[in-house]
Length: 315
Image (cartoon, rainbow, N blue to C red):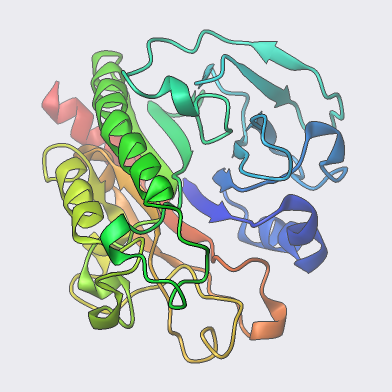
């Protein structure tokens, strides 16, 4: 089963730049998408081909929006807001459906309407798949220096907000993982986490220790959600102790040409599922003028026959 995660930086722009061609040629079975940045009525016709669409658009105009594409209609869907757009291939309706959001961890209600998270149970595999767009955040107050920041100082407000999200989401993630296990399912969390975990995930890591996305406290949080017994960083397990493969490059300057990137898009899988991955990497665009997004798709091929074998032995 080929599974991908892709922050497309706007579905309408991505379509113009070649998203449909990528989807058609790579033939993923499941795709987690982030930053669709469009209301349901503005999604281009036919852009998702023969995939079923599960879309949590949120309420922030022109921002966020997460989705999951699947070959078969999911057997269950959950979204923090309690609503989502569900479309079969060829559908163009814009009506959302009411869902049971399930219990939310303390602190998550603040973010529930922002279009940051959706999860589905696959109908053709014992896997719960989630798509996450984690807040970008900002710098804490003591690191905010006017004239050296791209954005105006905010007294640490964006930083504090991201840290609240991380604290609440860690509890929610533990709940989702345990729920999936109790139902006999593996969990695969994918998306743009806006955190580079290790020195191998940022080209200029020495200069990035005081940059949002690579702050020590953000990396410590990442440490807390991954382990050989909970969730495994699938791509890193296939590319240990090497730089990259990066998944994001700035549009500015020569970052893409010189591969000055960050790895902030992930497949985090429960250990049994992670062991079935046979290939893992990024679909880096061939040239700067052929980029679909400022992110690259992160694609993993999972051999689910190995999953069946492993689960049988455990039973």
